[in-house]
Image (cartoon, rainbow, N blue to C red; front, side, top):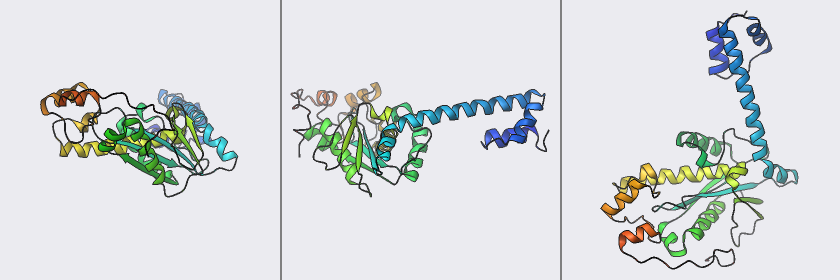
Length: 275
């Protein structure tokens, strides 16, 4: 059927993922051996998966595509990570892709495992026209509250971009006094590729920082749970008390420290964001 053995064909077209040429495909179709049929079936599944991923990416790019069509090219996706943890800063990222760029596999960072996030983060940074990560520290979180600290991290991420965006796509919020057109998309990290890419960069940057803080403040398990209020973290808090990187405006931390609950924060609207 061909000069290549089935083992060689399987390695070339399945393991290496090369496109199957028409001649080899016809030879496999004429080969009665089960191994040949298995290779064809696997390639058919891969083609189907690729088509589905292409459709998913086209849907995720609908906001960017509409803007690109109007001549807007520098579109920044912005998202944050680390709003719920009891410790560590909140992070945010901003990403700009060239028109038409797409990265298979990009999705809301919460849907991806750590290994996939790290792989995609490297690809996002390589592909992006510009990217930036910003943080709001624990002291800022405790001063202005986590909501505004998240927006502060987003602003820092946008301001850290090496290319000025013409338009911002942001996950469910607006950044006050930023003289750039903004579009808030509810659940944007699941609906917009550029926001999803930003969510991956924000998450991986914060996770890496929490691993470093684990070495500085051992015993809490920061490298494992990244500061989220899981059972092991709460148990460590009761034994060790609060570290300098714990958020003292958060209820479980205040309880450990014997502090009273905080009164409700002012209304979270874009008109009263702290300067």
